[in-house]
Length: 183
Image (cartoon, rainbow, N blue to C red):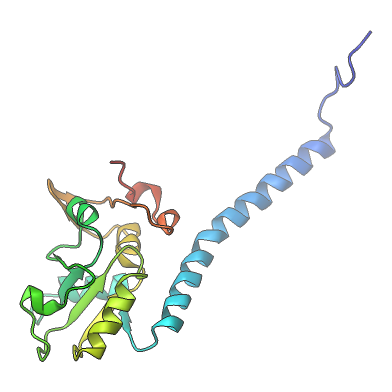
């Protein structure tokens, strides 16, 4: 006596349905990341409308352009994440500090670009600094995650690196695997 279902094979229709469902799943998965990035960025823009932003490409052009003044880069991520990797020349600042603690006075004409993982912590810091009189403050839109996703240079304890610690961020899925550090 045969067991129920024994000897059955997938029909061409069944194979086609499986392939179709896999294709739909893949398309949804590929569309999710850009959608999530834009949703995150839009939410921060709405929440902090007074904060100016610069994208990774714009900041890279500014930093690597010969001559002219460069912005002061301030990283507001936790010390362990900063210690693992950061943008070239970036200084670390606790979220409750001000650039004055790094030697940048309030009335300075220095341009300041603040970043964190994706901008969720940098935006309120920038908003606070703008209210304190720092006029040339911007946030790196997409933060270090987008910077790393685009293959931009990062500095770590051993020199150049292309990886970032995702930390416990709710946004860790926005960091591509090739840019994600494994501690």
